[in-house]
Amino acid sequence: MARPGRAPGWTLAYQTLCANSVVWYTSKMSLFELTESAITEIQRATFESFGVNERYHLQRLLRDSIQVIDPDIYVITEEFGEWEDAKRRIDLLCVDRDGNLVVVELKRTEDGGHMELQALRYAAMVSTLTFEKLIETHAEYLAKCNRSQDARDAMIQFLDWEDKEDCVLGEDVRVILVAADFSKEITTTVLWLNERDLDIRCIRLRPYKWQEKLLLDVQQILPLPEASDYQVKVREKAVEKRAAERKFNFDFSKYDLTVGDQIHPRLTKRALGFRVIQAALIGGIKPEELAAFIAGSIASWLITVDGNGTLSAEEFSAKAVQMSTKFGTYKLSRFFCDEKDLIRISGRTYAISNQWDLSNIPALQKITEAYPNLKAHFVKAEA
Image 1: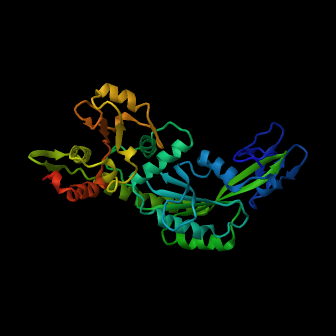
Image 2 (image 1 turned 90 degrees about the vertical axis):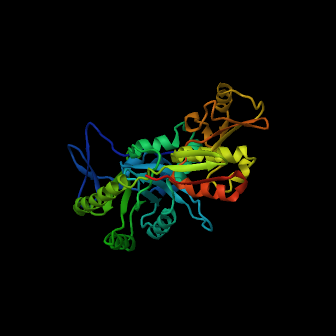
Image 3 (image 1 turned 120 degrees about the vertical axis):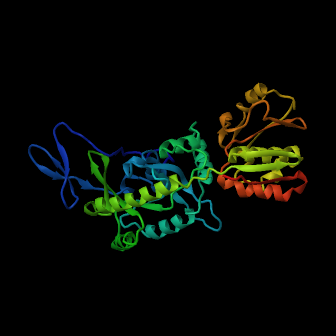
């Protein structure tokens, strides 16, 4: 079978309309074709019989059509496994509109295996992810998929957040299990866990063969539709409360920075990050040394243009937009690129990121403490 292309001999369809027949369901979840002369049961199928591979077909298709299982989640990445001493990977890592991470675990089997246990393990592992780490992960995913979107802008737009500086993920991690069917052991476990305020959903993708096509009956079987409205209302109330708390708990602190004899009062977190990194570079600290304190690759917070160290801002920008990293080309609006902000040292010209936020404050503090020769220190300004 060619990979990752579609397996030969099958066409995936979510809904089919026919002029002379109607496809409908019964309470037993059988699927029938209704014509003028007969009601005929549509043949059940398996993904395996159509050559549908779990990762190279099912996962890929759902990745690009995630609304099939939930219209209110956004795919961050696939095959996520950035933790130590762990060989397993999350099939799809998503985020919902309330800023909560969503672990999507896929199985093409009829019983689901032990997917609920795997998903719980993954949920625990990603529960400590920061928004900035999520942005970095999503940028790598977009680059891998050859998409030109900016990761931060795409996520902010989906989440509909107005404040772009201090972005904080929700406190919950949701789980969505997707399989051809689920064993009694899985459904019993999920019911028990949901009663204890976890959010785990079971989505059944039941395949049918109809006129050489593969149809999917997509049904949420847990929580039960009858109970979903009540559970959703309870959860929405909790989400609204947390959203209100988050709205009034954004950190708008300013900082007073001293570098040598210079005092920079009431700096925003973005301005503080710029001034500390600027002082370090001018003070002879190499970017590779600073990288030991700052999360992410150097390219995520510093643009370096080699060659003529007297480049103007216009010349620097022209060269920078032609450079590429593993995240794609630089978006200059995310860096301090004005003439007064560029740093020129030993034939190189640097531009520092303007994306510093609350999560970077400890790293900036460590930099000032690690290099006392910079004579730099900062404190939170009085309100």
